Image (tube, rainbow, N blue to C red; front, side, top):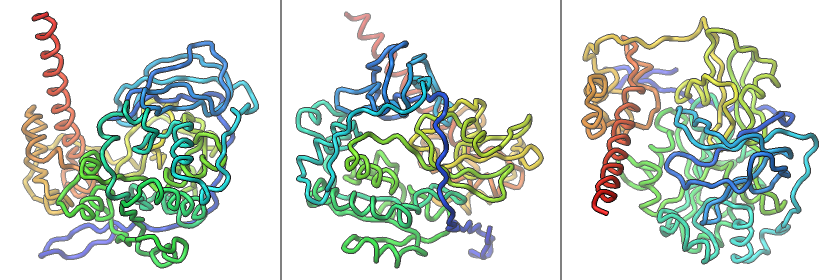
Length: 441
């Protein structure tokens, strides 16, 4: 971490360093767990049952809007049970036990995206079950309201989620061709919308050469100034912006990986089944970027890299700054899994419940200007709603405040608690309203 003076104070400057290295493709796992939803997203319903045989690429769950998830291996559905998101929220999932060699569904390919019409691309995306605002009219009418909002700006993020990862920026180098074709197809889908490719400043010149005619914005390598939510806010001209709020403002954000794989899936006629992620930490000389099947247990990824997790070690889905500690090595790799970090027991820095000293370090470094010391104390003493209204709702969970706290308070966790308290209050109000309606009936 580099540091520099800021009005007499030391302000952290965490550099996001680019690093190369071949992407290693892992062998398919013995089983996968396919999550059926993401928090705040449309709920999918299973269209298979326990005991059903499925082929690779076969839809296993879908929504009325056409959004679907697919089997990423060939095998048998062994259970339809709850699984967990990286931050511990319970969601439904479908487990598939591998039966051996992949038996793929018959592809329906668009070999030349440049020659394809807008209608062909929309039909192709619908066939592949993509979750997005471009659907045939019959499906769009059944889509959630946020998917029917107009798209005025498409922001493609080729920035890493946090320092230490090397996933999104690879689509400016190794997979630039897929991304370029996807952007060209998106121009026809988005009509008059502005398409903006956001890249690290160090790759801005090379990106301009590889993506001629595309509007490119270079962003500093300093974290959290290059955090996705901070960048989105700058693009929208506001102080802070959540991704759902950006969508309401007409901004659609896609990762470079998701954008590139959409085009690649259309060309091969099969749904997306793979995910890139960076593995770092214990047992490795340096970070390694791997490609694995969606739904792969994180334990399988570690086993493939000969990483042994022992008592006291901590496994994070994500990196050091935003990663969530995992208790289950069967937790699946999902679309949002860009990193997997193993911290050995002797290197773990333990947070402590010390009283706040009001030093102000956390306030000075917060990129979205939250009065962290006050909000954390509100959450700590049970005033979750007050914590939410006073700033927890604006927290981007960059982790910088906890890093600089001299008494090691769990500041990020307090912010999350404020948000969860608010969500719980909303849920209780909805249940009360439903109960009152049933009583009146």
